[in-house]
Image (cartoon, rainbow, N blue to C red; front, top):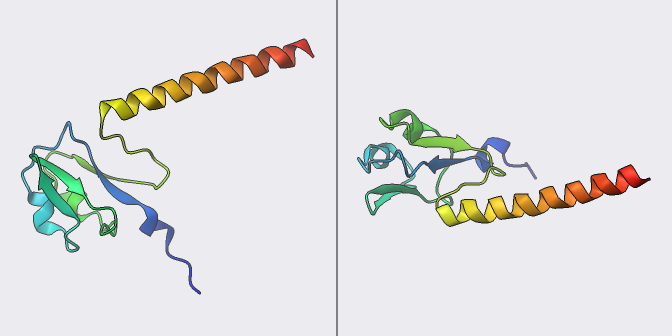
Length: 103
């Protein structure tokens, strides 16, 4: 069985701060993966095939193509949660370093 191309795992992502909801991306999307909701482009990741036409068309530069492991932050609370997790990881690393120095 043939493995899917790694590129297919990549997806379009919309920067809500840049998107003005002009709809030009929806006009060029061949898979109908983009809709305008509350004056912002929203990507349907199940439909997106990563063709990048929307990214090239967006006059605001609000659409980028990202790898699957890249976190897409759509809300401020997501960013807060990630910062809290990173702070906890930092504390664990500091404790490990102290333990290593004691050895």
